[in-house]
Image (tube, rainbow, N blue to C red):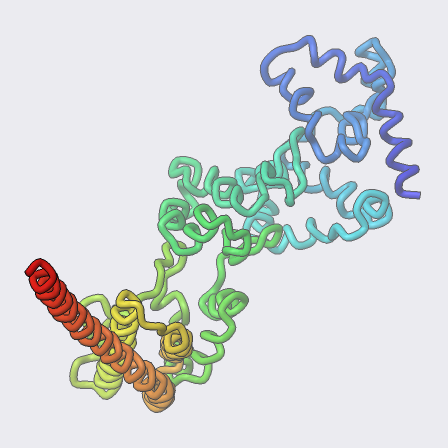
Length: 405
């Protein structure tokens, strides 16, 4: 059934289209719609100019083509309702994509853009600002304005324009900051399409700035373990009472850099010292956590160094190397546990990891002793062979002298 409808629409589009014929003879912005529409998702589903703009494309005469059904170019103030005339009609959209949501307009009215639009502010984003007009691609198409790695640039066309954003009293450096973030690194360099972009945190059709109370829930969508640990920590209640956003307070928002161990403790780059005074108990706990973590990391590195040295000397150490991965896994757990700020739990997990490190360290030391034993044995064996060779040489010389006499 759907295939039949698609073929029928395609057949109609293949018929004469006076809109296309006329615009092909024009230039610049009047020619552009014809060129870009060839790649448009609507065209691929068999829709044509009249489905959006009305009129009669089979008429060659312009006056006849612009009959009573002709809508022309919608005003900017009409675009949300214009697009929704199809996209909010579940019966109509079922013919093309039954899984596509048909509540985009209703959600749009709840967004910051929609709320301002209702107040007659037509400078805020509408459908065409994010999706385009005649060259609209499916969101899964890499060239679509709403494909993950294109979304930051799509949003920044407005949000990075200081002149355009003047009067809204919000920063315009979000795109510049995002480009330095760990999320952007994952998206653009590693091509990880699961890395968050603007709409993952702010929403798309219902885009709004996350409030203090909701930022944590946004972050928890990707970082559930850290979020659960923080929710059980003493900071949760304190943050709620003071109205401090959870994750953002330590990690920032758009410019979220890779987390590092230097963020812990009481050093110059530690985030703990932003709130806690040197004579306070939390300050001392933070210092102790960093101290224990550094000691654990140093022990792991020492064990790794022993194994690497033994490996370079030809001793088989694949088993202790594999065992050491368990210690590194414990280290990952410890770093995540810092969100709980529980010194007891952190020390327990470090103790588990240190037991493994002790075993690996012993294996590394034994491997190095074996390497030294092999080296000593090789020296002794080489010396013995050398002395034997000299003795053999002298014996041969002695036999030669006796033979010659």
